Length: 336
Image 1 (tube, rainbow, N blue to C red):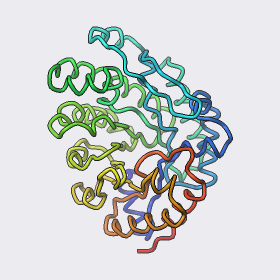
Image 2: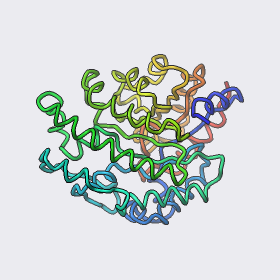
Image 3: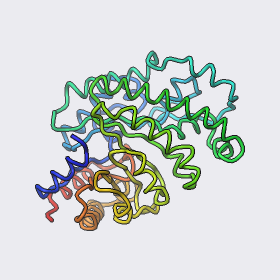
Image 4: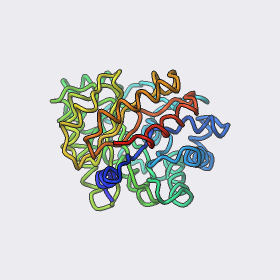
């Protein structure tokens, strides 16, 4: 079933789907660390299972990681113990595309680790909870390979080269998605934070067509595809909806996102997810702060059947467990 249908069915039953973007708090819950969990698929699964057992979200995602595909393509990657992996900027020659195209990422150990995690999720987690995975967006992956500044420059001065790279990243991302779907992924969330910094014209040229290609390639798989954009994406909302995604996950109001206004710009068959502040409210706020913001957003979105309560981004591992409990309890208890 498509996400919009599920959200609308819940709406008829006077409840909301609730899916905080959480993963890293589960690292604390299980006493491991981010590096171990993201490189040991058994631990990765235990982290997610602990979150499901404790909070019972309607959707659970793998640990957010923007380095998987870049690392699989040979980019230098840092692996801190207590923080997500990072891809430092390096030099890139467009001629390297020929070599990158030959890389079969299905043999990459970290790609396979996430695929094995999804397999365990599909087998071991309750059927009523949707199992989701993150992949890096086409323009964002191109920015990681080329460098964010160089990619931004390329939109103006080397568009042909940037298109060549986005063609490559789209191809590799689709290969990764195919592997995830084959082992039971029901939701794919495309992380495209770098595209939030593009203007509408550049977005339509260097992100939108590639997102559309991924969506069309997965059309008959039954998987739900969500677009996640960090930062202020208000200038891109209508274009994101035109990509054909089943839903969009948006940043918090501190980043300039007005969820109600965004909902007015998209069709009812596109789910809108968000957008409780992951840091200001969930990590640093009191239980009362969490309850207040959840109630405010539930009230603001009460007339939109395609709304799913979520957080503006993935929760930091330091997020107090009691704040997540209040988030879930308040969302479940809201009456409209």
